[in-house]
Length: 94
Image (cartoon, rainbow, N blue to C red):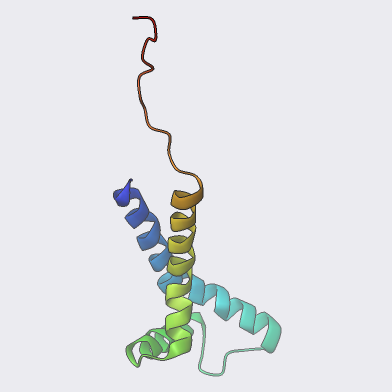
């Protein structure tokens, strides 16, 4: 088990969910719905971070979604693709 690597992936996904994914959401919303009423992308990020502080469910879902998906993926990999042990084959001729 390599918990350090798993932690790296989960923290990377959390970083992505909090600081990168909101920009994707902003630009997708602007292209699909028109300009954001409260300003530009950094205003959207500020609103998003305030919503995290106010414990709004949509903001937390956006922030934790990539980390949750990564965690589930890592668990499934551990269950269905277990590592083979590095055992030295024993000589059967005694």
